[in-house]
Image (cartoon, rainbow, N blue to C red; front, side, top):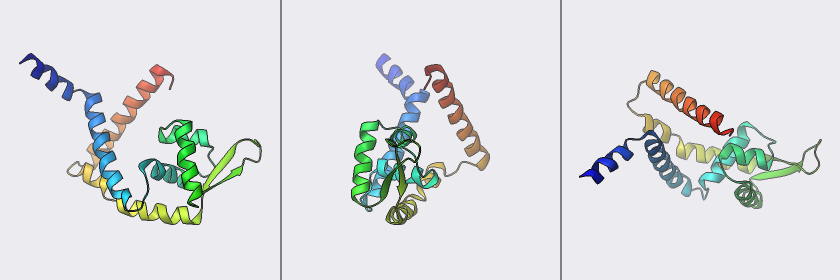
Amino acid sequence: MQADAHRDGVEQQIGYLVKRVQQALRGVMERALREHKVTLAQYAALSVLQNQPGLSNAELARRIFVTAQTMNQVLAGLERSGLVERTAHPGHGRVMQIRLTEDGERLLAQCQGATAGIHERMLAGLPLGERDRLRALLIHCAEQLERSTGG
């Protein structure tokens, strides 16, 4: 009986619920991207680069929440496929800037089409004000944790 009470308590904790949403979202996104032979990390990288071309490997890794080593692997695959290109930073010769190619732009558009309804499905039934409030609360939580850890 006490084990059930503890389990129920854990399943109601905010951290657990955030992770549950993240896992469910990841699974749905991966299935939608599979038909385009794109991983979630590749999709995230392409999406960020569309909005912020010229990022370095380290900057891109931080923005999509992977290690620099993982980012190297993701970028190597994207570069081999002709989806991104790396060029030397004009002011920092060792830093490589990453940009989408035309093929990368096309594939990203296809992936965006495949995933377009996922966030809407997740938020179905929530009024716009509640969606805005959820967004604000999640940002607040992330900022509080980042501030307390220096991350």
